[in-house]
Image 1 (cartoon, rainbow, N blue to C red):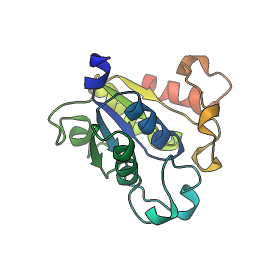
Image 2 (image 1 turned 90 degrees about the horizontal axis):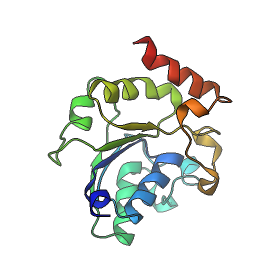
Image 3 (image 1 turned 30 degrees about the vertical axis):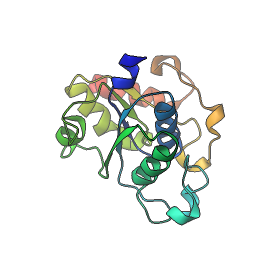
Image 4 (image 1 turned 135 degrees about the vertical axis):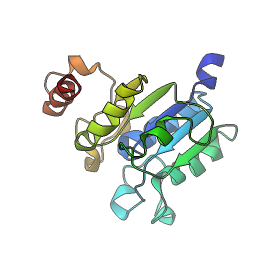
Length: 171
């Protein structure tokens, strides 16, 4: 439990999948979290974000996740990075950022179309990364209780997963 609580986990993308992942990680005892994403809460995203309400409209999704998670887990140390993970920002977001250390694990919770650069940045830095693909696309208001974790190689029915497997091999 101590090793888990001291592990820095970066969650990239705070939509339907990422906001729920961040909430679960914080409640499970992961204390240092880095929430990465530039998106703001919109009326349509309130329905699927883990904690956003109408009062949060216009605020950054990462900041909304941080504020709400600190209400339930006040000892959590949450760093918000309101930026996209791409080649220009990877050194800062996957490096030591302001917390002074690199992430022990990176959860990539962005749409598959945006995952290429982020996945390549993790591979180039030899970081442990988990690509979290929604089987129903981010805007479909997926029920978090119906999400499951599977090895990317075991997901043969998803065209997005098959394409994502081929991309790093082409590099």
